[in-house]
Length: 279
Image 1 (cartoon, rainbow, N blue to C red):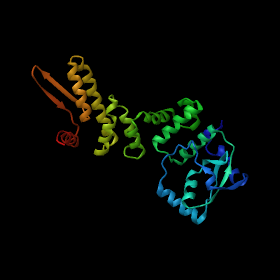
Image 2: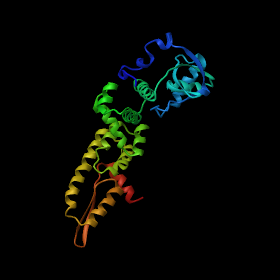
Image 3: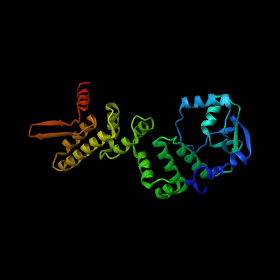
Image 4: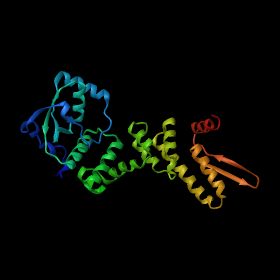
């Protein structure tokens, strides 16, 4: 297993040996395969096109790092250069071949992206989760090796508890990591996707969302207390209406009459509810 992970990529490159000491060879693009442990899922097409143009004019200035795998070479560091070289219709790319284990590849793939700040919050969380599972590390141990705090690691990994659609919102930047953390505070987890959509539609900031979550949670606590006294059929109908409107709904019934109260939190929220009532 690689030592000194927290020291950065020098632990892999051994300072300047990559340029001054290691043998740099030309490897055919067709013989390369992406790093199977690459945590980065999204590559900006515009940035790749820009890099490809630079490669057409100047070539690849820094060799990529690869390892031999059967008849092919797997990329350890430098996937952007590889992808841009393909766009530039290059036949070969300069590379340094290293002998690395799967665990070492995984560590350095995460390290490179973290140092370049290339990962989204969800990609970062998935990378941490993968490292913990494959290297059998606790959050505390991983934090020490990466030079991060344990709460930093924990807050990212918690994002993986969000529904898949909401994780996609974080990845694409429709909502922030702060929004994601606030949504995780909802007591009624099945409302997370609905509230996330409301955040996007209304352009709510994190503080506004936190206030909404607190209000919804307070209502849940009140409803839980009152549900003990309510008819089970009334409770079930309240739940259906709550899911439909994405907000707190209360049915108050006495004998043969009653009323339904639908809570809203702003003028925009009221308009949203009215649109549901009058599609």
